[in-house]
Image (cartoon, rainbow, N blue to C red; front, side, top):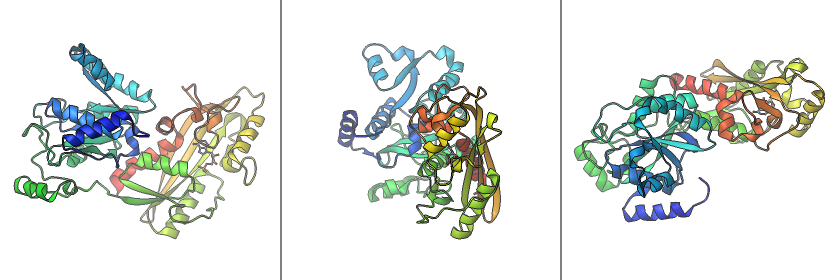
Length: 413
Ligand code: IMP
């Protein structure tokens, strides 16, 4: 989604001619790798204009479509747009196929119409939810609305495991929106959820017909402090906790001092930092502590991972010291562990994540930070530093702990 391509320009121009407004400013970072819902879907035109809107925004999508329509020249066009032919005889295999497709892609927005049909239906299909859960990606809410003549991509929702509640919450985002065929979208009779999208004239019309319900995302803009100076970590947390929360780092709060970590366990250090931030800033906050534990080194560097090569050492110094210590050692098993301490209204909660892997013989890759270039997770042939951010987030120790925190936040706040 970087830079404005020719395809984006052409689609923006065409949509302007058709009098559509496209919101390409507020695309959540999660749209890079997600299950992307598209609703309402009441006619082929909804899909065509919706797809044009996504292209105009720079969101590249992949979608499944019955193989019978892949004849010349429509087939070529559909393929160019991200369409993949499917044989509806094998419908049971689709979820697994799509899950693998997502897991094995760096960037992919898998487009799905939750209604599953262009006819009126009061039930959404559930397959998209299972796919997102299995592939460990968020569900992002894409829309095209004929009332406001606006298309865009709303916030991201991480499946909490409570499918009915999550889907009911997602549906609220689509309240009052209309597809091209009136009466075909079962949520269109609900009070319109996004008055801010409407002109005064449109608002008047909506008030006369369906009414307006000011929609608030479940926890709109709620701020949570992440007691860290590390920008990588803040971005990772923001991507996982989603747009329902605004994550503020210590840097964002203009606090540049180091918080002391003097405990001899990860949990102790995480607690110490979270408690400090809670007392200092007085709001919900969390802190994490991570350690790399190498089996052949009796769990070292462990809780001392940051300062393994001495006070104020660099990441490169640590990696070099580790490789020296591992020189000639055959057992290269290691794991990353993260503990998150979260403080809400004075109460403390802890979440953990762990990933097993091994220490490589030499550094590989240049993404990430810390020991990423020498840690290769089990089942991977690449090191953390050779994975994309979203790939690493989907399996990493901190990703796991953050997802546990995210699940907790869904019910706790
Ligand atoms: P912290 O407690 O998260 O600051 O982690 C302590 C040290 O572990 C860091 O200074 C890094 O060297 C290392 N570390 C933490 N998380 C990661 C990771 O995701 N990849 C690689 N190294 C990490």
